[in-house]
Image 1 (tube, rainbow, N blue to C red):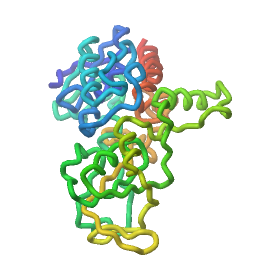
Image 2: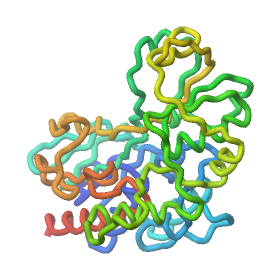
Image 3: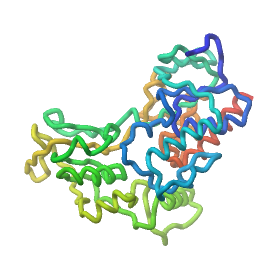
Image 4: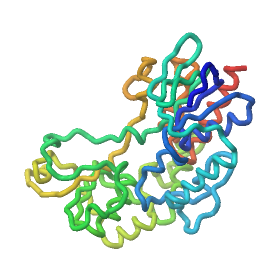
Length: 350
């Protein structure tokens, strides 16, 4: 519950990897800070991912600042192994976290922020928004989408293949989530894979380590990468499930259909095909609903310098994507922007 009249130096909204990263660097200071987390347990958005999810980087490249993730049973950590790591990370540093506290809105009164939550009102001199994107799943607009009578779920709601056994399923989305979910569902259902462009599968020896390092070099322009393999953070890593799918030849990609009808989809050539379900692996948008009253949201973003809001100087945003720091939405990349954020907060209050 909120503590009446208590003023914090900093409140971090969100207890996932971004919020914990900022907390790690704030812990070195003498600031009075608090993490407000909507979840009842540690793990942030990872609590809501599908059961068989595998990270596509080894443990040493899947670690937050200060403490390397212990070596896992297999090369790529499972969801449960990463959740365990996050829980132990919190305990290791004894961060001040209040669970099951959903921040409904942030308002500014004078020089202070008031955070209205389901557990009362909290007051702080500075705020870090680290709510991520998991609460804002994106589904593209398709003609007659409301006429489709079958099941539609976003990857954020997908847990396992059981509901799709013996069904006809379209998986939409060509990234790592789309590939991993398609590989799993194709074992129990008839599937078709819809992607905007032809997906790129990385060679077996390349994983998230190489992806991040190459993208980082290109971003910083420290090295001419013209003679190296050009990769994207959205290219598909061959984790075990993807290798299995490739061996079974299930990754036959199709360009987007033109519209829906009640029993399925209509392809670009006009042909109808019946399906029982659509799984949307189409990404997310930043979750910023709690900041609406500050009138700083433009095109689903907040204008920032580094991670600091330009129009609200005592507000920082961390972990939403490149507009809050290069690769800040990734486990490996968030530490750099979190460190800068903490330094700016400490300096602003000194």
